[in-house]
Length: 337
Image (cartoon, rainbow, N blue to C red):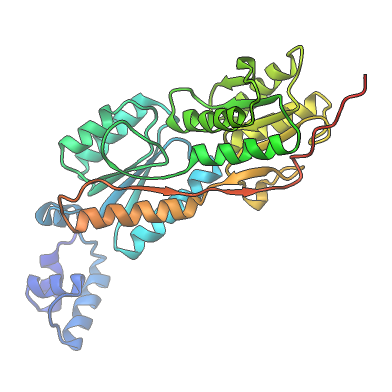
C-alpha cells in the first residue's frame, strides 16, 4: 500500500506538508495543496487512522453497545449517537449483545483492544464486570437507558414515571385487573417499569395480584406467551401493560389469536413508540421515550469527556417520557352475566 512518503515524493513536497493537507492544519499554498491531493488520488492513498491514533493516543472512534438492534427504539438511539459523533469528527462502532452478559464481555474486550476512545454501553444486566473493566482502563464511559449500582455518567429515560402514567391512564378508564407483561427481571428498566405500575396501583388503593405480574424477555415471542398465560387465568385481566414495543406486538398477535377485540375486550398500552412503517391496528397508546435525543445527548457527553479530561463527578441525565393516548386503550366494559 502507498505510504505518506510515496505521496510526498510524487507531489514533490515533504511528508510534513502531506500531513498538513490531510489534517487541514498549518499553512499550505493552494498550488501545493492541489499537487498533494492529485498525488493522493493517483496513488489511491488511504491514511492509516489507527497508526495516527496510536501516536496521538486517540483513534476518533467510539463504540455503541446495545442489546437488540432489531428493535426500532435502539435503531433510533443509534441514529442520534451517529449524528452527534459524525458532527464532532468521530466514527461509531456498533455492537449487539442480545441481552447476553457473555457477548457483552466479548465485545468490551475486543473494543478495548482496538483502542476505542470511549464507550456508550447499554448493560445487559446489573452485572458491572464490564463497566469495571472499562473504568480500570481509564476509558470514558456513558451508560445508556439503565441505572447501574456504580457512579458513572448515565443518560436514560424516566421508566418508572412512564409506567406510572400508563397505569394511571388505565385506572382512570375504570380498569382494575391490569396485567404487566414484563421483560427480564434482572434488567433495571424492567424493574423500574414494574415499580411504576405498583406505585400507581398502591396510590389508587387497588390490590395487586401477583399472578398479573409476569417477566420474560423483551421479545415478541415473550409478549405472545405471556398474553396467553394471563388470558388463561380464571379471572382474566381487562387491560395489559407491555413494558416495551416488541412485547406489545406479541400481545396484539395473541389477542387476535384468541378472537379478542382491542380495546373492546382487553385494553392494551405499551412502552416505546413504533415508526409509522410498523404501526399496528389498533394504534397503540404508549409512553414514548425520546430515543433520538437520548442517543444524541449520550454521544455529546461522551465526546466531551474524551476531549476535555476532567475530574468532574459523573452526571445523570433523566429524560421525560410522553403519554400518547390512541385507540388501543378504552374504558372498562361491564361484561354481561
